[in-house]
Amino acid sequence: MKTILVDPDRCMQCCNCQNACKDEHCDNDWSPIALPQGRHQFWIQVREQEVGQGTRMKLNRVPVLCQQCADAPCMKVAGEAMYRREEGYVLIDPAKAKGLKKLVDACPYGVIYYNDELDMPQKCTMCAHLLDMGWDRPRCVAACPADALSYVDVDELTWDNMYAPLERLNPEFGTNPQVAYVNLPKPFIAGAVYDPKGDRCLEGVKVKATHMVTGKSWKTRSDNYGEFRLRRLDPGYYTVAFDLCGYSYKEISKVDARRCPDLEDIQLYPKAE
Ligand code: SF4
Ligand code: SF4
Image 1 (cartoon, helix red, strand yellow):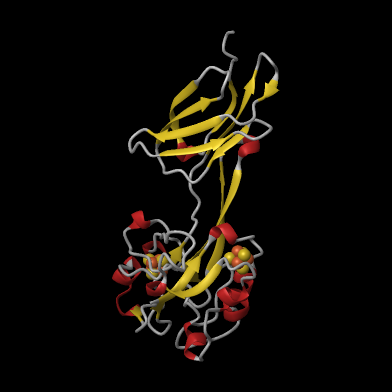
Image 2 (cartoon, rainbow, N blue to C red):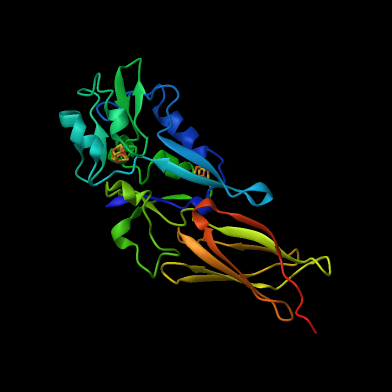
């Protein structure tokens, strides 16, 4: 199945995709695929989430659109007002969807909007009207200057031609989403290490986080400002260890990575002579 592959790591939030979607769908009637997109709708939207704290906080950006779910809960409440095309795309039939406000709440991804003027729900169509006209990709993909969006055949993606493992957005929703992602944001643990006796930042400290359930570990070293960031962690609790030759070993346990914690300034003391 051809689908959109999203790489949030490459997204620079230029919003070209959002604007291209509006240019394609606002004021344009693409019946029978879709009627003109209503105001205040984002059929693709770069969603922001602040994670971490203080100066070590990070802004995650994830482009989100209809996930073209194989087990689509929207279809279960829509009856004949939604259908699946031959290639697998899930569409709202504008001729049958009048008044179906309940569809908005049926989607756990929050990508169905209600058009009050037309009195009907609306969402991304994968630009099926363009694909039917011979386009090789939807407008948002064509507009992305950073290759954060691509239109791919997921069955052709293998370890040989992919640079990161394929993921799905919120698989816990249980809808079997068909839009693919790589490099989705993951938890991190950040902080800095210093020597309070010598009043200096400590560079080159080995920092190791070990997952308290799975035992899987992540390693890094502090930079010349003593700063460290353990990236792309699995969710869960960790023991974080700090080790530098000539200094006392230190461990902090029960660090909850889901909050992307800032461990702030970690003190390491020189070993006694
Ligand atoms: Fe339906 Fe929402 Fe899945 Fe799209 S993302 S198919 S609207 S449940
Ligand atoms: Fe991100 Fe590409 Fe959309 Fe720009 S066009 S906001 S880089 S996904």
